[in-house]
Image 1 (cartoon, rainbow, N blue to C red):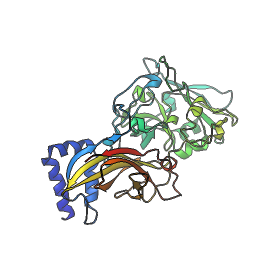
Image 2: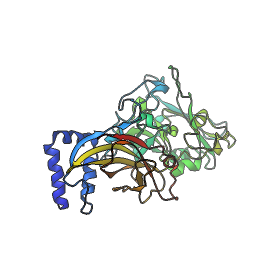
Image 3: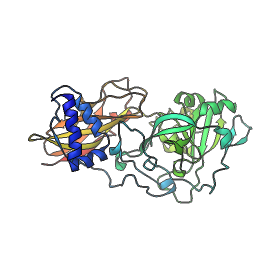
Image 4: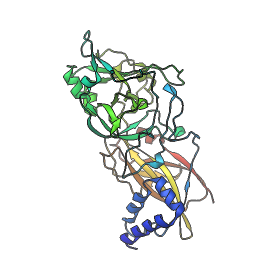
Length: 394
């Protein structure tokens, strides 16, 4: 079967198979994945195959996705990663994850002001219009909560096309010292009692960390103004860092001495941002960088002739360096093998990969990924943090 014929076969299957059509639409990236498989050499394991069903992951909570739970510091909304598409990478605003809901904000935010302290003893209050004179395109960027975990189906992660203003321009305009440390705070006063969270939202950065990351103050997500739960009227975005630094409702930017103690937010997220212990001083904190990572997001069962074949679809994201390949295994005793269709552009916020798993025996499996390149930091992959489990039945 030629590549063109195989592509036509897939398109026809979408039109004529009701169950398959529904699943393809829900799965998002599967059509792109199959076209990728179709463009591989002859011997495609899914040749002439028929979709059967999606196999759920096991050993995870029953928390719902795409639904707001709780409020204030207790608010959570988990994005359904199975919906990720290679060809449409942004997460719809209504599905973008939420780790903290909006605090007790004023009814009107038109007069929002931010306090600036560029030098000790100098205090200036400016309007949002003075701080962010115009909203320019800031690009596609991924946000991942440092506490993103299996219990929430790894759904505290999303991508948006942001609009805002470079923080470097703001710091330059208001004469913040380039060799200093900058404390950025967000409004964080809630009436509801927090469970497992600490009130107070601020982080201390070296000036150079903010400029290197390309940090910016965002006022828009996916072409529209932020809503209240996503930081209206203004939030900080630090590309490549965990979202515990993406402060919503920015209220103050100030210079602090290098002897400044770490903030309560920094202490709360010390272990989740892979610090060595819990440093006392802010300057001792390492950048809260997201390493390269990968995880499966959907397992599909196919029938090819008399055999059952499973298509593992996943995503890869993060890291300043991208490996040439990713390895996968299906239990702790099996050998790692290269993922069949891994290809990642380092400028993409995340990418979709797939791997064909042929005729496994009934049983429980733990799907884990790793890279074989020591030049690529993968702290969470190294300990199996993003591994997921599935049960195959006869």
